[in-house]
Amino acid sequence: MIGDKNVSRVIEELFAVIESSKGKDSKTSYTAKLFATGRGGITKKFGEEAVETVVAALSESPDQVIRESADLLYHLLVLWAEVGIEPNQVWAELESRKGVSGLDEKASRPDDGA
Image 1 (cartoon, one colour):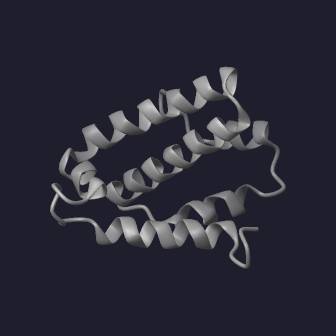
Image 2 (image 1 turned 60 degrees about the horizontal axis):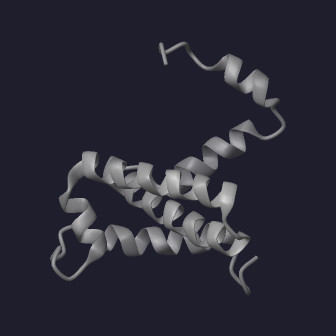
């Protein structure tokens, strides 16, 4: 819990702010600047943040892992907005996996060649 807000609510509020940045001036909004780079630029930045989070987890303090994790989540939300995914869709997917073994869930996925 974050104060009186639950985590999903905080993420949904941030997502709304991110969505509202679509089409804004990229000179005055970092999020608009990300959207201007397109899906390729957004995924590149998300990947960079993922690597920074991993590096922090391996060699930095918990506070640094927290900061990098926040950056990673923010960039994931930008990616969701770019792709047209809303947080509630991800929550529904997670809910559908509740009580299912991770191995069973993974085995039930269609083989997409990945």
